Image (cartoon, rainbow, N blue to C red; front, side, top):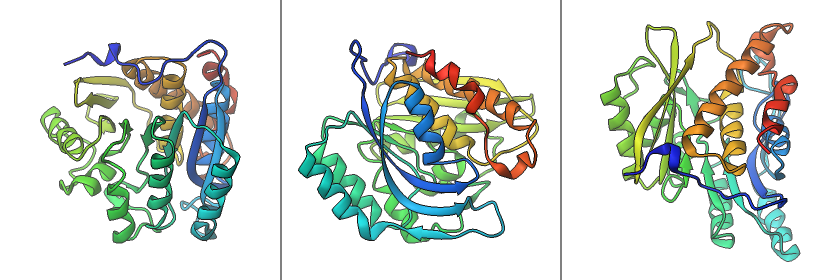
Amino acid sequence: MTNAKDVRLYKREGTYIPRIAAVHDLCGYGKCSLGVAIPVLSAAGCDVCPVPTSLFSAHTRFPKWYMHDTTSMLEEYLDAWQEEGIELDAIYSGFLGAPEQVGAIQRLYREYPGALRIVDPVMGDGGKPYPTYTPELCAAMGDLVDGADLLTPNLTEASILTGIEYQGQNVSDEFVRHTMDALLDNGAKNVVLKGIVRDDGLIRNYVAGDQVELAEVSGELLPFMLHGTGDLYASALLAALMAGQSLYDGVAFASHIVRDAMRVTSDQPDYEVRGVSFETILGQVTALV
């Protein structure tokens, strides 16, 4: 087994700018999804190519929101990419609007077999799926686990993907290992399990792989929750990996970015619902390269 500090999923070559397909929704108000992924990955010197899975007026924590499902356009959208001969170094997927959109991601996998596969299975939190996630969509999302170079679920999403009963955020190391083993058995090559909270003022994230030893990365737990932190975490983690950092260091970097962004957000009006404010700390991402 290999230490996560020695595992690198991407080797950055000179001045080359890697190209990433970001398969996420686009939200008009309330920072999350593509509104986070594009600036964060761009700050890390990556060329971000959006594939919008849905259009939202605002994120779903607001009482009123509108969603437009983009499934019907995706085939022609990707046909145009193929005709142009676009090359990709990574495929980064998140929130999906319909079960059929899994097929669009799998198409990208077939057409770009050398691209890194990053799956953030954005399905729910607090033991419940998000309002737009049907059982059919949750089941389809499970098809992306097999072959993922990196899978980044929270405990709710891990429960949905594995069938292991959700037990809250305060779970034992034994439970963490059991859950991660189940995800690896389902075909993920590496897993980051996010958001384990115990009674000691820390938040823990765990990383392991089929050939990578289980490791814990802990940090300060702030006394509030924000929408969009999962998207920021996964995007910052991928930014670090595309800059050539190790899997362990990428997890630590993402944890620090989320903590610092939450502190900035808490000074903003209506911070509980507006989404995570990361703009003033993008310099930390730029410093990666």
